[in-house]
Every structure is written in C-alpha cells, then in structure tokens.
Amino acid sequence: MKTLLKLPITLLSLSLPFAVSAADMEKQSPWLDTFNGINKELISPNYLDFSQSAAKLSRSIEAFCQQPNAEKLSHTQTAFADNLQDWQQVQWLNFGPVTLFMRYYSFEYWPDKKGLTQRQLTSLIKNDVDTSDDKFWRSASIAVRGLTAIESLLYRSQFDPMNKPEYCQLLVQVGQHHEQSTDRIYQEWQTGQLADWTFLDEDEVGDIVSLSLEKMIQQWLEHMSMVKESKIEAPIGWRGKANLKLAEFYRSEQSLNAIKQNITLYNALYHAGENSLYQKALATEPKLAKQLDESFKQALVEASKLPDDFYSDSLAKNTRVELAKPVVSALSKAQNELLSLVTKLGFQIGFNSRDGD
Image (tube, rainbow, N blue to C red):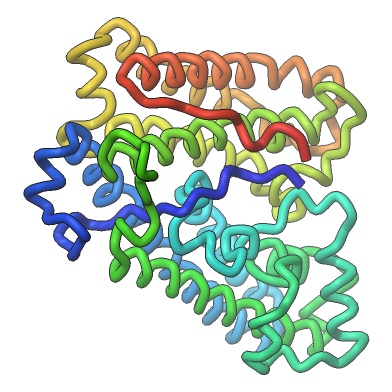
C-alpha cells in the first residue's frame, strides 16, 4: 500500500510553551505568520470538525443499532459521509500526533487491494472476539478501525447490520473507538509542543518553524500525487487494468466528492493566514504566485466537470480515462508550479516517499 511520508511534526499555536520563546522564534523565522495561519485557520479547526462529526457518527450508529430501520440507517450513512468529508480536510497531513500508534492509517486503511478489512471483520464475529474490551483496541489491526471499517459494515451486503445484530454491535464498537481516536488527536494538537515533533540536527541550518512548514509543504505535494495516482489513475486503469473497487470510498459513492474536497483544500492552504504563502510569494515571484492561484482554481473546475457516474460501471474504460485527463493535467500543472514556487522561496523538498508500494 502506498503511503505518505511520515515525519514527526505537529502544528500548534505559538502561544503554547516551547523550548524557545515565541518572541525569539519570531525573530528567527520569517515564516511564523504563514505557519500560524495554516494552523489556526485550517489544521486546528479541521481536526475539531473531524472529531465532532465522528462523535455525531458514533451517536447515530448507536441509535440505529438500538432500533434498526431504514430511516436510521440513512441518517447514519449521512453522518458517515459528513465525517468522511471532514477527514478529507486533514488527510493531507500525516505527521504529529496522528503518526503515533499508526493512527493515520487507522482512520483509513486504503487501498485495501486484498480485502483485508472484509476478512478481518468477518473473523471477529466468527471467533466471537470481545471488541468492547479496551485491550482489544490497543492491539487491533488497523484494517478493522476507522472509516474504512465503518464503510464496510454499513455498505457491504454480507454484513447487513439492519438484520444481523452481531455486526451492528461491532459497528457500534468501531464507531466508538473512532470517536475516541479523533478526539485524542484534536486534544494532542492543542496540548503538545512544536519541539516535541520537529527537531533540527546538529549540523542543520534554519529554525524550527521554517523546518515545520517545509515538512508541511512536502506533505502537501505528496498528497497531490496521491490524489492523481491512487484516487484517479489507479482505479480507472490509467496505465493498466481498471478496478473501480480500488477507488477511495467506492462503496459509499463518495470517491468523487473526496477528490473535490482535497482540491478545494489546496487553494485554502495556499491562502491561509494574513501573511499566506500566496502573499509571501507575491512579493518575490508575483507571476508564478498568480499562475499557481489560477491553476488550483482550474483544477477544481476540471474535477467538477466529472460526471456523477465517473466511478460506475456505466462508463467504458477509455471514456473514463479521457474524462480524467483534464483533471490529472491540471493537478500536475499545479503541483509542478507549487514545487517550483516553494523551491524559489528557499524550501528544500526531498524525494517523494509515495513512489513504489
């Protein structure tokens, strides 16, 4: 399974205690306002939204399993889609507290090419495993946690929580654990310290804020690759055989919406804060800064043109690939421009850890 780069870093309010004072840090880093803007406008509130919608999802699951019916199932599926949407706003960021105990991959185990989630959920019921025990969750497989497991239990006909109480109770336990995990991540964002996650080597030149922002940008660029390659190209058979079931959240039909959410976020990242990356770039690279702004907007325009049945069997492979070409092209253009821009601004972007499996 392809992964995003895992780097130890968290983004926290600079009013929190640090190894150096906020005043000293401000003198050392020209990127303090940009860093702070992304954290305060996007990361912290988006993690809060993710936590709150996970709690609503858990309550909805509990209500459904207490009295299973079609209406409550529909409400639960809506709550799932809401939480999934909030996840797309933080999915790009795979460092900080979310890296502990594989929690990032516990939120979404995808792509699941071998159907591990399905098999392991079935095994839990078959072997009468007590999933209400905290000890179980301390060592449970990432394949039976989070949104991937919840989607499978809600949408796979073999599980049928409406008519199979044992699977509904498993759904309750997965939902409760997911709620607890999202809340812990949010709380740890608020109480941790930047120095807990970002370290300068003895021979490394720079400051902790600039290095943190550099890691963020690396994650951003790698996530753009993931959207192109894993969310769009691989499922539709861009370079090989199509397998639509590899599309992200295919069973709940949220694949296309997830992509639109991601692209919308990219533009928000670019403009976050009073002294945003866009504003900083305008001062030294105005042409490229404006060009990238338009490219992000165009990528969303192209993604919005994809038909609702883009990931359905109703379209031929060649048709699907032709429809995807403008989106992939627009994303590639924006990604190349972002890489060029941040390099000109002094950031050193390393290799793409998502290359290969």
